[in-house]
Amino acid sequence: MMAALRKSLKSARSSTRRSARRSARRSARRSAKRSAKKTRRVKRGTKRPTKRASTKRPLNAYMLALQKARKSGADSFTYKGKTYKGRKLKTGLTVFKRA
Image 1 (cartoon, helix red, strand yellow):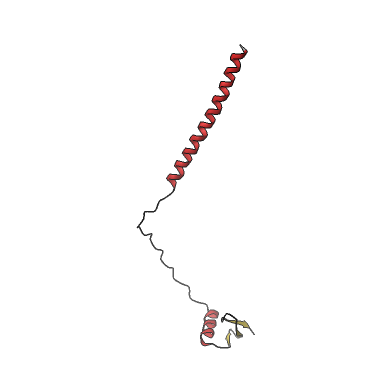
Image 2: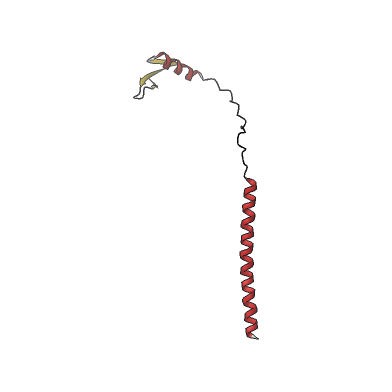
């Protein structure tokens, strides 16, 4: 009687383990299928639509004055009554600082 009980318990345990492994494998396969469906494949030779360039904002008054001074090579420029003096960096860029 005890031997039969042990045998039935052992078979019940192994069957639950087997079913757990089986369900784990099934869920792994399902998730792999789902991820494969979700990925989009781009056809070779097809062109993606190009984005249109947005219009640029105009420069503000300070930046216009700064640009003009840089292009003309001026030592200084004035903006709203304040004078900005320039100096050249090692890289060749001219920077202006309020005097």
